[in-house]
Image (cartoon, rainbow, N blue to C red; front, side, top):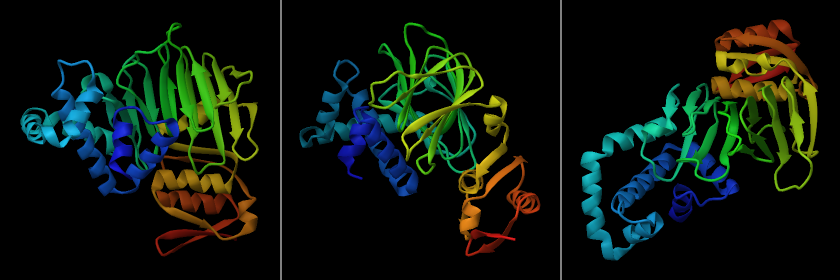
Length: 325
């Protein structure tokens, strides 16, 4: 990934597609995280140099130019001695897989903020407007430092539960790959992982509108305990009634499956336990599993899976191989 692309993301100028690509790149390697963190720190140092100006991007260009290189080192030294504890806390909360509560009002207000989780962890994020997001494993959420426009817009990769403060003058928008979810104030769950075949929006309270991205058509309006499922291959949306409490049970460490294709089951298990599954049978690819794993260790999950379904397992080269019994 080139520095110019990362700088574009840091300044908040990247498109949703570019943001998605950069976030995935950052999460692949700790060296990528280090490169991004360094550029971010440099950007903050440059903007500190221009607190009395109105154009932050202009100051960043001055920061990057050779003519002001010595001046830049001077300000970077000041930042290192005065602001580095805050920067370290900022970057730690962005990329740690610990379960943290991240309050955006307590951090440096420069650029776009991104909070990510790794396998097996989740975080609670408090947005500048007081809305709360619980971010599931292997997910990320991006949003501006403050909601200054007529919309409150965030970008989600993965799964999150949203509890949104009502503001009729500023609708809240979630962009999730192929979908856009619009609300005024409500609570709902969105599951939008790149590897999944479907995107799910489940309403818990209030009302939401589900739109296809970049397509002008009447939105689908959900009522509480309704779920909109977007099929990526078919590019269509179906709505069904669900028990919303079961959908959001992941916040309590539970995994609940209801006639779920085994391919999707192992994707969810991978995100929680950070282990690769290999389905070795075409018949198992067609199998749909129903069951509940309530805060179990991986070995307990495998044994319960074996007992409650026609599935056997074995470990092979740090992978779990699944075969029919």
